[in-house]
Image (tube, rainbow, N blue to C red; front, side, top):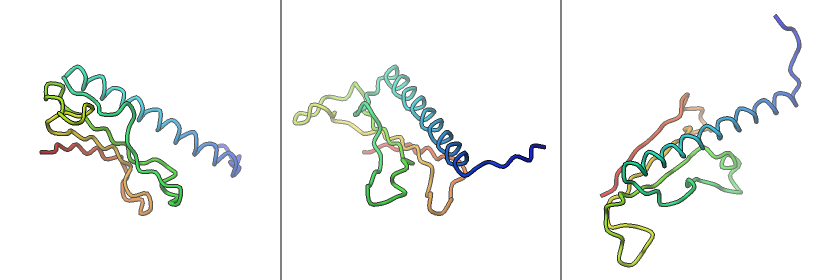
Amino acid sequence: MDNEKTTPLENIKNAFDVVIKTYQNIEKLLSEMDAVGNKEGFLSLSPRFLRYKSENDTLAWLVSFFIKVYQHSSDPVHDQKNDVRNGPFYIVDVEFGDLTKNAAKYPDIVIAETG
C-alpha cells in the first residue's frame, strides 16, 4: 500500500479533474439527446442547455442542473413567435440533486411533457 499522502493542492486539482470530466460526459449526453431527438423529429429550442446560475449563491457557481427543451418538428410554427411551435414542450432535466444536503447519490434525469 502506498503511504504517500496527497497534498491539499493535489486534492483540489483532482476534485476539479472529476468535475471537468463529469461536465464533458454531460456534454456528450446532451449532444446525443439532440442527435436522437433530431432523428425522431424533435427540435431543441436552444443550442445549449439551460441552467441555474447565480453570482451570489456559491453553490450555483457549480452547475448541477442541465435542462433541455424540445418541441416536435411537425407541430405548426407559432403565429407570433417563430422560434417556438404550437404544441407541447418536452423537457429533460439532468440534475445532481441538492448539493447542500448531499441528498442524491446518483444524478436524476427527469422527463416532462407540457400540455
